[in-house]
Length: 71
Length: 161
Image (cartoon, rainbow over all chains, first blue to last red; front, side, top):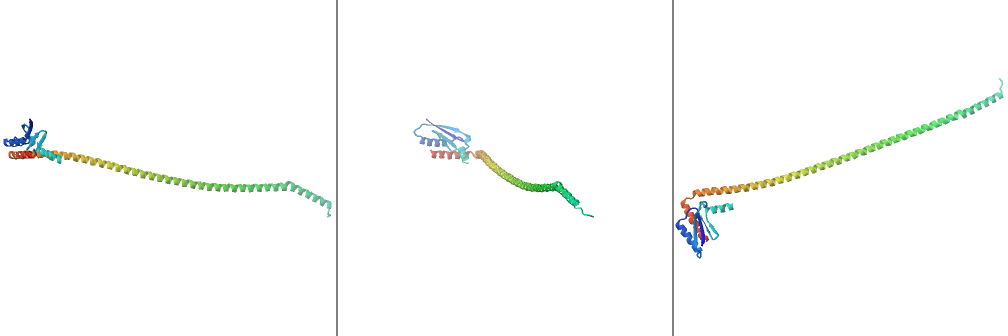
């Protein structure tokens, strides 16, 4: 079973969860997926998805960190 | 008055004898003494002249030696002055070089310190900017904006899958 950890600044709505899950199911169609949702206020806004050792981080915290490393 | 020839002859012989003895015993020794004295005076004069000449030579030698000594002393003095001047010049040059080296070292250290300080300040400014950005963004995002940002994030993740 493939564990998918989803962290967001606020709790996701059901519509948002379904949209995200559907896309991930499509990408990993051969795997059985387990979704773990977490609320992390330190992300400020947006969300991050960790799957199979890969991290998709589009949170405001990540963007600020990118900005900080650039300056 | 009758002329008595024997008396005259006797007087003549007598005079001759007196003349002979005087010449033999007084005149010649006195003459010899005078000659000797004259010779001695001449020798003394010659010796005196020689002494004077020697004195003049000694004076000349003295003057020459003094002149040479003065010249030598002047030469030594000049050399010492020249050497001292060179030493002073060398010392000055060395001092200038040392000062330049110290100045360069000081400038280098100052530049390094400035760079480090600037770097440290930059890091502090970055941290401060990040904290300010977090505070501003955190407080300015309301529920609606949060939802919009979540939707945008979901779309972005779906695109990158």
